[in-house]
Amino acid sequence: MSVKLKGDKEISKVLTIKQKALQINLNENIYGTFAEIGAGQETVRNFFRAGGASGTIAKAMSAYDKDFSDAIYGNEPGNRYVTEARLKNMLAYEIELIEDRLSRSKHPEKLFFTYANTVATIDFSKKFKGHGWVGVKFQLDPLEGYNEIIIHLRFKQTNAQLQQETLGILGVNLIFGGFYMHDNPKEIVRSLYDNIEKDQIEIDMINFSGSRFNYVDNRLMSLQLVKNDMTNAVMFGPDGNNLLPAQELYKKNILTLRGSFRPVTKVNMDIYQKSKELFLQEKKVEEKNTKIITEITLSNLRAEGEINERDFLDRAELLCSLGQTVMITNFQEYYKLVEYFSEFTKARMGLAMGVYNLIQIFDEKYYRHLSGGILEAFGKLFFKDLKVYLYPLKNHETGELLTSENLKVHPRMKELYKFFKYNGKMLDIKDFDPSILDILSRNVLNMIANGEEGWEEMLPKGISETIKEKRLFGYSKRNFLK
Image 1: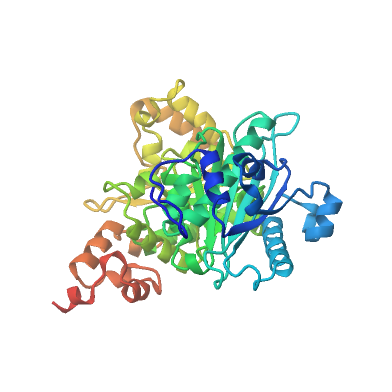
Image 2: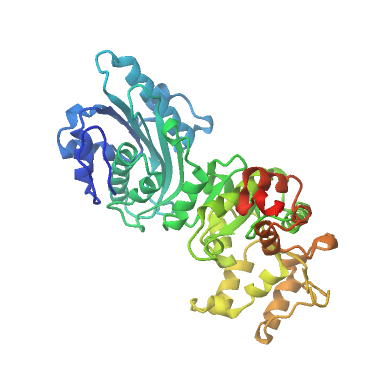
C-alpha cells in the first residue's frame, strides 16, 4: 500500500488503527461529522483517542432513541432502522448540515465528510448475531461533488462489546481508505480487514459511487469480496448494482441455475425457462415471492488459473442484459449452497441442472472431508424443502438422451439415488428443445475466438449483437474478415 493526500507523507505498510486515525486528524483539510446508531460511538472514539481530533471532528452524535432518530432523519417504512435507506438518509442529511453551517468562503480548502452507521449487535438470546450498514460520504477536492462508499456487514462474534470494538476499527479503515486509497478501490476493499480477523465480521456487499468512482464496476468489487474470503456469496441485479443477499432472499422461494455462462447459450436459457415453469407450478410457490438466480462459482471462474476479471465481466454483462439476477459464490458443493439459502428462508427451493451435474452430486469423492461423508451432505441437501429440475444430456456419439430414468451412478450409490428419486425430490424437464442439445459453451467460445461462422445462432436473441458491439470474449471483427 502506498497512499498520499495533500502534503501527507507516503504510507507503505498496514497502519494500526491509532496511526490511521491520527493521520486523518493531522490532515488540516479533512473535516466532518460522525453519526452512529446502534452500537455506541465506537468509530469516532478512535479519533478522539488518537489525539488532534479538534481539527477533524465537527460533530459526533448518536440519535439512539427511535423518536429522536425519526425527528432528525425522517420516518422509515415499516419502522426498520438497520437498512441501507436509513444509512443513505443519514449521510445525505449530515452532509447538507455541514454545507449549511460552514461557510465555503471561510473554509475554501476543507474536504468535508460524514461517516455514518446503523447497526444491530447481538441479541440477548445470542440467536441473532447482528448486522449493520456502514458508509462514508466525502470530498477529495473542495470544488468537486461527493463520493460515497457503502458496505453491509454481518457480525460473527458472540459478544456485544467485541462487536462494537470491531465496528469502530472497520469505520476507521473505511474513512482512511476513502481519503487515502481512492485511486485503488480494490485496495480499499482489502484494507477493510486491516487489524480485523476474518472470523470477526463478514462483509457481503459494497458499493462505490461519485465522480471519482465513475469508472468502478461494482460487480467487480463484489467479486473482490468473495475472492478475498470476506464473504461466501454476493449478488447483483440486472442493472449491475450490487444487492444484499439476506435482503433479496429473505423468506423467498429460490430457484437457482448454476453454470459457466461463457457465454450464455440457448441451452442455458432453455433450462432456465423450463425449470422456472415447473417451479412456479408447485403448490407451495408463489411467483411474487420467488427469486430466480443464475449462479457462477468462484472455482468456475478460476478454472483456467487466476481469475480473469475481463472474462467475469463479459459473462456478467450478458446475463444482466437478459434480465438475470447473478450470484457469485464460494460453494463448490451444492449442499453448501442450499445451507446458505436456508439461513434466509424455509420456503421451497429448487436447483436447475443438467444430468452431468447430478452425476457429480452422487460422486463420493466430493464429500471425503465430511465426517459423515456423502450421507451427511445429502442430509443437508435433500432433507430441506428442495427439488431438483433435471435437464437431459445428449450423448453426442450415440445420440442417446440421459435422464433421471437411465443415468448411471456408482453401484454403491444406486439405492441412495433411488431413495431420493422416488421420493419426489427430482423432476425431469421433458418439454425441452431437442434441436439445441448439441450446443456447448466451450465450442461457441472457440468459434468466437477463431473467427468461425455460425455461433450467433447458438445464443439467445440479442446476445451475439452485444458480444460484437462490446467486443466480449475476445471477439474481434478482424478475425471474421480473414
